[in-house]
Length: 264
Image (cartoon, rainbow, N blue to C red; front, side, top):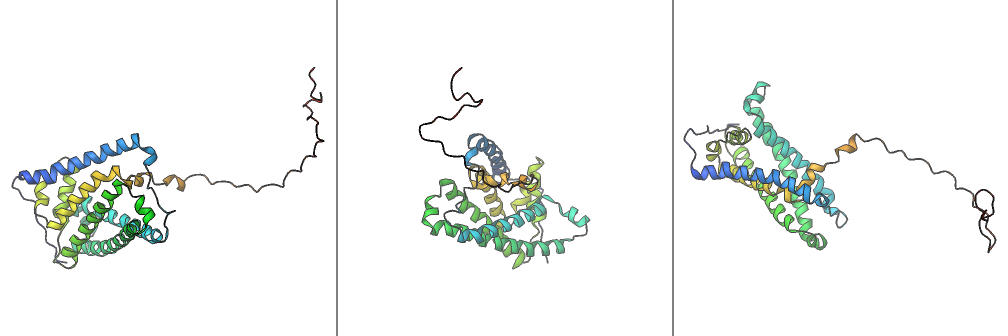
């Protein structure tokens, strides 16, 4: 694949670039962290996925696994593509052509699964009246924002790395992303990236800012403990105890000790 890469510009960033690629990401990151702390302290009972399986399960049976499987693959691909420098993958024998070929194919499969699953989840929420009535304000923000972020990411990959000439985002977008976490922001690195990549990055920042106020918080409460908890021991119920003989009407039960219930 013939990938093109834009080297980060040496010229200083403009005010708009500082706002979009430094201020906005840091504000969203601060809201992400502080929002989770606030949500955990103020709304622990709401720290759930708010499942609606009891209301409708046919669409959920297929949409839920597809979406989560695709999401796990997409997250793993983003971690490798954004957090791991190209020199590291090259050191283990993975050149740019091999990396981008694998990323495009695996990313396409993950994207299709995620879009299909998300489409089913959105459809059941729109078509089922009972689920639609249970949709709160956070869901009305989350689902459009999540859909926008996913579609922008797939569109960027398809337009530039599937049907286009190829674009090496690890030389631009990844440099900007890693710079944020080492407190050395490089806004000029992403400023000249294709528009779809920039829109995808901005929508992802907004998604992270909205994260702590939506049902997405349930990802931090995965039941990992179930994998290592002790087995539950079930004992077979024994035979029923024999019934006590019936007492004659009007008699009182004898007290323990054989006193017949009389006070000494």
